[in-house]
Length: 353
Image (cartoon, rainbow, N blue to C red; front, side):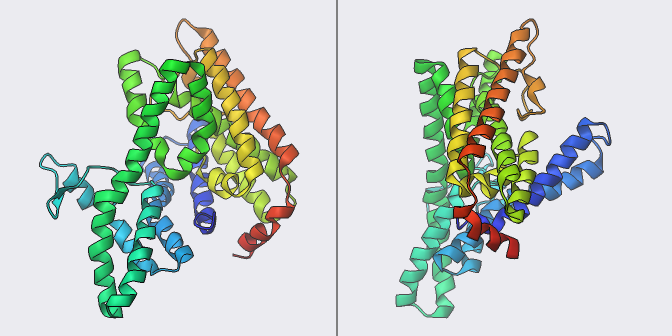
């Protein structure tokens, strides 16, 4: 919470901009193929693309270690030249060890692990070297450890989790969709949800549809929308109200980061409400064997049309029912259990900033 809280205004602004672009395109106000749309979209995307650096900065601030050194050490993960090098046919090695080809852009967990590493190294370096050499020592130790061990470790955790849930789907059927829907807020918060992208693409190429991850995404996005709307309507704090309402708008269009980092992760009652409503909606859609038939469209309150299946009108109907269960359920639960008192100090601090 301490790491994400300073980033809320930037992420909320980026989310709102992206939402306005999507909405304007849907209403036919401008073309999504225009360079204006693309450039404005890049402004929003930049915040999340460089999120590892922002996370590294705030994590270093919380851990009381050198922020510049931590950001520089983390930057190697998303450096375009580094990404191109490790993804080339010949690959890359560091000190004789193979560097895995992983896209770390927008991921959170590797940056946090890198910050923890820098913190430990810095405290050790303060005992054995001068301040001038401390930076060099930090780079020599932190960067290889992050590139060779911590980054792949964070990515592997997500990969193992995805494999486990696929196994779970085979053995428990619709419950796997419900479990994934309920845990998706935590997976998105750590960037581990990206591990499901290859699985989703494989489902489309082999089955022609996806019966797992995109269903969970619809349930989660709608739950974020409903819960944040409830917080926005119930809260008496102006700053929190604005963040929640803007987050609800973003989530309604499939962009959950502002809602997730701005409200959900900082309010346990909201998080639990979302997990409960999202899990129930996911289990329902899994039981009804709902299928996402359009690759590349983020399911949300206004993007449910991707569940239209030729010759099977019930698929869309069940998707809409799942949407309503998630949105209305999270709204009701959050409206009942959310209270301002415990979070007033944080909201006032955000307002002052």
